[in-house]
Length: 566
Image (cartoon, rainbow, N blue to C red; front, side):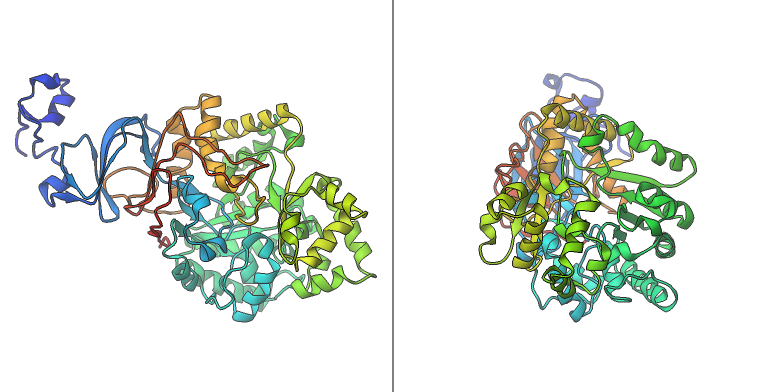
């Protein structure tokens, strides 16, 4: 290797030689960037920024050089030619944020610009969550499930090829962000036993394993279950263990929304204990979705983690995620017993209009989570006149209609043909909300926690997390609680990339894919609120996806450079 020149800028920096003593701004061979030694023209040069590289290392000053879709250099670089130079002075240059849990399955197909996610700095989303997704499904099962789950996943094109995970990966290629998929448990069950309340055994279980093998071979990162939703909740723990043994063969991840329905068929009464038991018995890596304190348990994150920590000591490989809001969002069918879901959407609608059955549905709504529906509001309602109900609290609409909350919910489900969803109202107590924010920050001190927005991007009055989740945690809450920037960045970049096998993503270094977010550490914040939930965030001027500018000057460019992660 040639001896460094005494006029090499980089060598002078290493030796702390005053810049004024340098006779030329040259770089020696040892420090010359790839583009200086080879091509002279870069596609994109991000100059003067502070790089938070995703590893947890303290931020450092460096330029970032990009050719094609890859980062080719991260270092202080001399002036050079580039098709585009971005002045990042005073800004943080970080890996693009990775959303470990999004319900954008339909939204990405209907509006691939996906402004609500890309404006936050999200460059990769892990979809097909909670066991919900459109593949692998036959045309008939797709049409059935599309209507049943429209309240969460929306209504994508009816003629979609959903036959395989590979077919859906092709459909998602070319959105604004990258997409990673899981094999959804609902699809596996629909293709084997339909909307029937039986666990998978024998031939159906073997068929389900074959579907799972195929999906994992085609690029799925693991299996997702939503054990409080149907038809997934018809499963038992033995079924989950058998399926997860297949996932473990591939080094995949078992991603689960833990069970609070049909707990009599679950090991240890369901919940987190069942998820850990599946991991212990199958050897699969476990990732627990949206696991955090609730208003009733605010201030008790340590209690939440006791079982997790015990399982980790026993060798179970567990990670978790949360979102930085006190309440969530779902669909009303979540509150109905499994007997009413058997047969699928048409059977459910028939039962909702059957005078002999509806009283039992009403009782089911009241029994599962007593009082919960009194603290909810509609986020999106399909059908004629449905838009007028968006944002209306359940209690208010029930009063307007002179009926009970439960009767009103059943009526709206029928009127909208199940195309409806709701969110809970935020707690009245500011102290409770602030305590839950603090709980999230405490959980993120652990190296096994990540952030998943749980975004359902439908309706005028959707949950604000669909537009503000990542700027809220990286900006507002990080500053309020004085959290090191590098810790938060690592939790939303490198950590999920490693967990989900997103090779080449999650770090700012040469050889990685050029997925980047450039933000102002002091300005980045969420502006979406429960009253006005679709407001884009502030302080995220640039987002780069696979080397191309997706957000420029806080505006979407229309560039659709996303990939289906192989």
